[in-house]
Structure formats: structure tokens, C-alpha cells
Length: 410
Image (cartoon, rainbow, N blue to C red; front, side):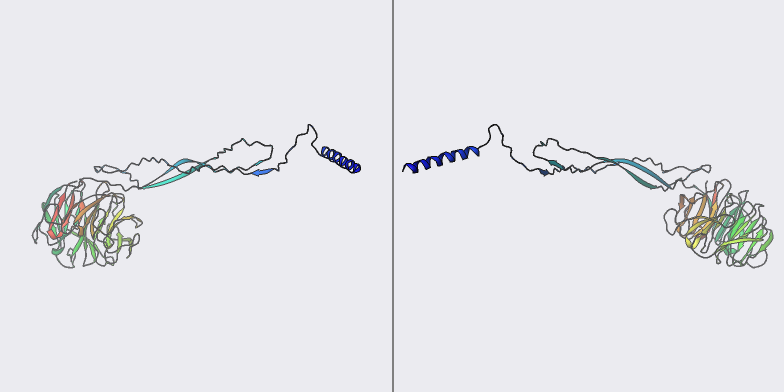
């Protein structure tokens, strides 16, 4: 029994000694093991992308003006202006941070990226200059239906000389009548036929630098030349097919519209052929049955391209320069234009026959004004045809169906 008690006590002592060996050492702090980790921080910034460009332009447009024969205008048709503005955009930034067990993360990332963008704005302004002036006033008229002096069967072509005398083609009575600038009858010549000094449906008339008178003898397909009192001088044919208009420039050249051949033919003052141009068509420089023709002081030739409802400007050798007009009744449009005349300042007057009006343009075709309208009253027309301007700017228009000539002020 005593032996068993000794063994039990020894076992207790041995157990206590073993527990002391495995206890912590005095003064030593326990350290927890923490593994490192990766933390991703994403900061989202708002993108500023709006812009409001400010565009300022100053454009001067001619709205209205009162023209005189000495005025000079520079027409600006287009203007291109460029504008720039600066736009600031704020980008979106993503930042990644790695934090270990001993780190303290206190930094808040704020990164702003500014980028400057230059935008160019191009604004094109199309400026249509409108040059307006008061139409010329009605002055007077003369004529009536009949075969007597100062009467007309069907007045067509009109021309004026340097003394402001007015020559009128009276088609139905195959004659030329001459008047003073106030409509006083002066003389007449011509009868029906094909002999020298006779006519078969004459149409156009012109006065050259020498004061002589050239007449288109349409159905006889020739040009006849007379003194200013009607003495026959000469004639020429030029393979014409129903010629219509005629014009003389300040260099002694004569230009004939060969209507059915759709050509302009140029001659010297005695009828020697020089050149021709045109040809049937609607392209630049082509013609469809031209009626009226005129020359300015600079040697430019203006043709009423009747079936194309336009005016074409050429050099005196036939080089195409420009055109204007289209079919219609708006300002600058035409309905069967016939007569053309140029004043001393270069303005172009067109008898817009089936719109019953006269239109005025600058030398380059910018519309200026118009007057007329259908009727029998003063300043009204029924198929205006021939037109001429004297050195003082007075305008003479043949009004065939009303059997008269009307005069308008400058």
C-alpha cells in the first residue's frame, strides 16, 4: 500500500515539472503573424466636357442705296470667317495602392489632368447684295396705230444718235422713222421690197460712230447702211438666217445676231466679216435664238439669249465673260427677253418682253430695279421690245402692241 502512494506522488511531481517547461518565457511579447494584402482604391472624377463657344462676327451688307450714274459699287459675294475657342476637360484617374500589415493608409489621391483642345469653327456667309433705286420716271410717249407719220404698224428696234435723235423700226410698214428726243417727227424712209433701200420685215437698228444708221432687213437676210437722213449707202449679206438684233461699238465694229443660226457675227464698218461665236445650246457662250444686242464703252458685248432666258456678256472677240438670269418673273429672271441697251455708266437695261417690264442691272448682272407691268397706261407695256439710252440717260422703249414709243427719265 505504501509503495502505491509513493508512485502516485512521484507522478504528480513529474507532471508539474513538465507544465513549467512549456509555459511562456518571462518578458517575451507574443507577435501575431499577419500576412500582407493588396488594396485597390479607385477614385472616380467627373468629366467636364461641355463647352459654349462664343462667336462674334461683323458683316456689312448693302441693303439699300440710291444710285446715280457716277456711283461705283464693289460687290462682295462671299465672306469666310474663322473662330477659335479653348475647351478644358478634366480626366478620370484610377490609382492602385498596396498596404502591408504595418502601413497606415492616410493619403487620399486627388489627381487632376487638364488638357487644352483648340476647336476651329468656319462660318461661311453668302451675301447677296441688293442694290435698290427708284425706277426712272415716266416722261412722255408718242405714236398710235396707223401708217401716217408718227404712227406705227408694229414698232420694234430703237436706236439714238449723239444728237439724241431717235430711230424706230416700223416693221409692218417696212420703214424707219426718225424723231427728235421729244418725239417730233423728222423724217422716214423705206418701202416694202428687196431693192436697195427697201425692206422686208426689218427688225434691229443701230447708229455707228460716224452717225450712219445700220438696219437689219430680216426676211431679206441682209444688213443695209444709210446716212442719218435715210440715203442708202451699202448692204451686206453674211449667210444670215433671219437676223434680228444689231449693235455698233465705239471702235467702228458692227455686231449682228444671226437668229436662226444662233450666232453673233462681227463686221467692220463697211461689212467686212471678222469673226463669229455662239452656236446652239445652253452652255456658257452658247445661244438659243438671240434677239437683242448692245455694246458698252469698254468693248463688252451683251446679248439677250432669248430662249435661254438670260443675258450673256462677251468680249468684242467673242470670249465668254459671264451670264445672268433664268426663266421666271422674279427680279433678275426673264420671260423671253428682247431688247438690250447700255447707258454711259455701264448699266444694262433689258426689255423683259413677256413679263411686260424693263429691268436694270449693273454691268456684271446685279439686279438694280424694274418698272412697267401689263397695260395701256403711262409706263405700262404690252410686249416691250426695242430699247435705247441717250447720252443724258433718257430711256426710249418700243411698245409694239400699244403702237407707241415711251420715254423715261434718267
